[in-house]
Amino acid sequence: MTNLLGITKSDLENYFLGIQEKKFKATQVYEWLYRKRVFDIDCFSNIKKEIREQLKHDFDMTFIKIEKKQEDDLTVKYLFRLPDDEFIEAVVMMHDYGISICVSSEVGCNMGCAFCESGRLKKVRNLETYEMVEQILLAEKDLGKRISSVVIMGIGEPLDNYDNVINFIKIINDAKGIQIGARHITLSTCGLVPKIYELSKMPIQINLAISFHAPTDELRNKLMPVNKVYSIDTLIKAIKDYLQVTSRRVTIEYVMLSNVNDSIECARLLAQLFQGMNIYVNLIPYNETNHLEFRRSSKTKIREFYDILKKEGINVTIRKEFGANIDAACGQLRGRENR
Ligand code: SAH
Image (cartoon, rainbow, N blue to C red; front, side, top):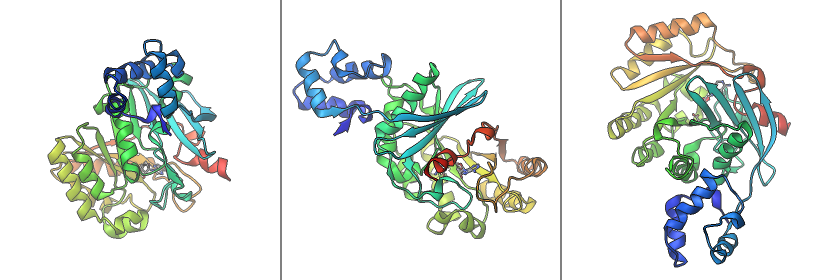
């Protein structure tokens, strides 16, 4: 059965038209769910009983549950239990400009990046759209505050669960839904090239972040198996297409791994690849995990890398760190639960 929290407004309008009802009922339902945060269909008082019964017959409203919560001053990390007893994570970060949440898109991940904790647990299944929406609803309820930006950067490869992720984006972006502006939604991908082309045509123009992490195919093949299918060359072509179609700046993520991808040579090659493109590079200090072969680059190394990119005319930032002491690296909490 479809979960009412996983249906886009236009699909809900079609549903109402299909049962010979006016389509504005979809807006009324959306207002109960996302404005008033009322999740009991019997309480939808402006919708007549007969239709409420029909809704209850056609939809369910199962909720995922907060299994565990870990927090420090600026970070709250949630471990959620799904209806089939799988676990996923979301991390909330308090910024001076608002509150952001990093949500998961799959149970596990098949991309197999060498340094990543999430990929240790192979993909079990896609997340349903409602399971992504509820990460936000539950976090907001727990915090007693509204979240202002969403990054799809938790466990999973969002473009490997394309349809559900797109519906999730439509629901959270809807003016009658959670109402998060497209410019406050970021999707991060390891580089599933055909889906990047598809994404560029989506009417909601979100921010795209690409996990790049290496400037040569030789090194990227070792770190990110996806590169053996979609090489740097094809990925950059897709990024150029995305830039052209959307006129939106793309973020290039680069996790700094000591003595692996943090040399001066790497910085120069990276700058060459992106010369003249409307991108910016976000250098991410590696969150150390049980992959003991990978260590975080030193502050000096990161700074040196940053300076070279700058000098070469590339926009670059170093990611501010959150929650290092609460296992905030993706997959760490879930990994622990499954051990
Ligand atoms: N599959 C998507 C989104 C999830 S990973 C993607 O690959 O983009 C989110 C980001 O965190 C990616 O850039 C990933 O490479 C990076 N990452 C994974 N493990 C990390 C760690 N231990 N420390 C810092 N960044 C990490």
